[in-house]
Amino acid sequence: MNQKVIHSTHIYFLLIMSTGFMVHVLLLPVILTASNRDSWLSVIGSVAPLIFWTVMIYYLNKKFEKKNMLSLLFSLHPIISYSIRILLGIYFFLTAFITFKYTGFWAKLNYTADIPDFLAVVSFASLCYYASLKGIRTIGSLAVFFLPLVVMLGFLVGIGNIKYKDYSMLFPVFERGYKDFFFGIMYACSSSFEIIYFMFITPFIRDRIKIKPLMLVSIGIFFLSLGPLMGGIAIYGAEEAVKMKVPAYEQWKLLSIGVNIERLDFLSIFQWRSGAFIRISLSMFLVNQLLNRGQKKSWILPILYTMLIISVLIPWDFGSFFSILYSVYFPASLVFLLFIFGLLFILSRIKGDSP
Image 1 (tube, rainbow, N blue to C red):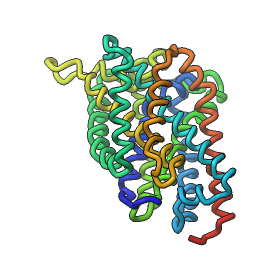
Image 2 (image 1 turned 60 degrees about the vertical axis):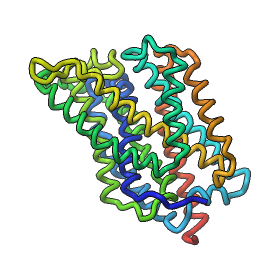
Image 3 (image 1 turned 90 degrees about the horizontal axis):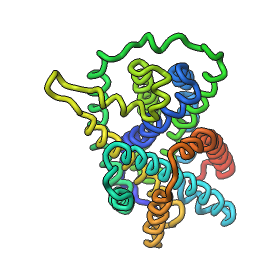
């Protein structure tokens, strides 16, 4: 059913690009809203659950090493198979939609105000569609190419803005008690637990996932959320950082090199778009894999992207969109990821170790 066309290294890069976008962009305004100044402590508090989660899904994945995850899902009783695959397909589609919609809000605010929404959405969706159509090898190779550049730009803005940072603004902590701190941990986990994605990509790899690189990926995702979060609070203060909604990218507007080079925030467009591109392309590729056995139906992916474009173009004010993210999507995502883990664990027990 599937060709083994990538190596485990590609998966590590894909996880950092996709889940990294989640914790670097979508998580920060949400966790700041939930925990305010204590949000950086919430991220630190999520390290232990994240490490435990990483170990658990690694050992769960070993249960499926002799199996093809996608083939296994298709081999179940039709009612069970359709139910699971449709649920997963909806989840991955929502992942692509929320990423695309949030990107559209940010782009409209910063650099596409004079461009028709249809043109901006269709042009970017076309690039994502092409990557999804070409397959996991293309998406993985692009992730390997993009990630070093994204990391380099991250260090540039982080180090370049040190002169503006006052880390005393991270304190005092627990001004409003400990409730917000624990709420923040929930939001941090709901984003970082996305690394379970790799179990749906392993059918395409030639070698095996190893625990040490996977643990390094988890640590990298942790720092992708902690670094810009602490930096945003240290520069703007917690109250202002909450209002910004994208504090990691607002820091680009302050960056300058010497006294003659300013307005380097255009580099943030590449950083944001590359992460969104990988995340959307990968999510839609997985939806297609779940709904289109053996890629026999070439019309499914174009329909999925048409649905994505239409849904993104539907008018929606940012306030209500963010409210849904905060109150519904993130909590529901955590519950769903835990449910998927439990479901896969049950399948591993039922199917045993047979190929």
